[in-house]
Image (tube, rainbow, N blue to C red; front, side):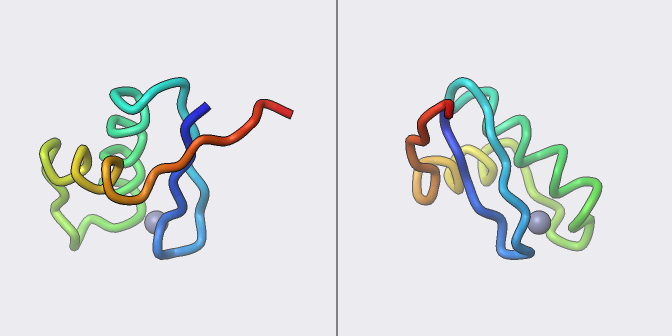
Length: 56
Ligand SMILES: [Zn+2]
């Protein structure tokens, strides 16, 4: 399980980095439209800030 904490305090989770980048994109579109986050930027955020979490 891959996890990333958004600056707004929301935690996003996905099975892998590709899916997590998609989650980040969708979250940004819904919650932070001003960011105008691109797919590439979402992927970079995941690379920089995502971490591994247990499934508990
Ligand atoms: Zn957010």
